[in-house]
Length: 115
Image (cartoon, rainbow, N blue to C red):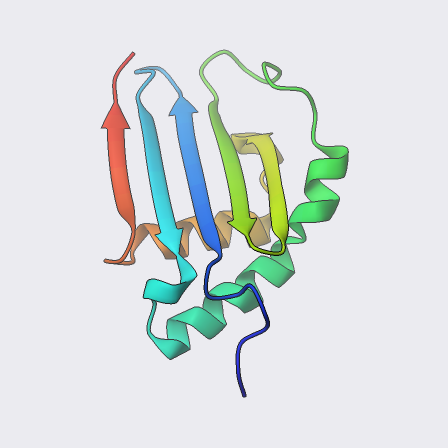
């Protein structure tokens, strides 16, 4: 079974920032860099996250607690782009699981910046 059109050029970016230290971590993953099993897992995890639904109902940036981590998830591909911003308390379980999973992948490119 082949991947859907646009699935190989898909790029997921997770920017996590805030908290007490104010450190920002940017993680980027390109689906085409993944082994086949991980690629399928990524596509299934993204389907569970329902990013389009989240971006339609996500609150404006800046809400939440002062020390709360804030997340921005962005998907880009030839099929279109989608981005959502959520506070740590607003993360649905499927999104939290996706973030935890990509944190463990060696194919992820990370950049850390301070306040």
